[in-house]
Length: 255
Image (cartoon, rainbow, N blue to C red; front, side, top):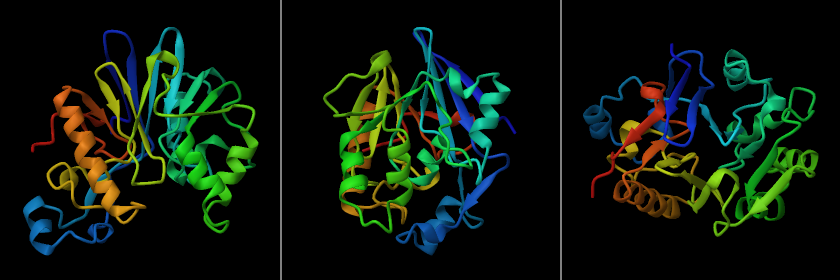
């Protein structure tokens, strides 16, 4: 399986870091509105192909990660991909977080809750930080509170009006979580968890995965962001897009 694929852009390179060491299928039951007829139409009888990925962007002599995958106790996939590229965790300059779910921030800490990325500035959306740290029941945010506390000297909160290092532009994509954010760099859009099931949601963006925090907002956001990407002829990189074709897609959404 091709687990690390590099895409070259005029001003930067992007490496897809797969957290999967083999093909991954999620059950169709994760999509409550997916009818038997749609399952047959879309060829999903065996499940929905997915992946668990992060992305490494290199520009201006700097290295940036977009999300970091799971904690190493659950999976070392992202760390293995970096090791294969001969990149040390201390080499990472920036980390841009799309949202605070376990499979996106878990890898910030090692198995003993030590900082993994000692030299990285960690950029987190202020709405996401506030939603999880200040407005989430304590039984649901223990990991998030712990991680942000341990990284407090490295964390930088931002709004969608800010321009981030390397010319990264954050774009509001709320719904999946309170402050879920996607990131644009030139002709690339890193979409986080905007899409969980590629074969389903590009064609039927009104179908949500059960992970979505606010279903109505998620549907609105998904339609808006996909239209924005199409109108601007952007490439899409998604953390749960299929583990083929390097998780890079263009112009999948049709009005």
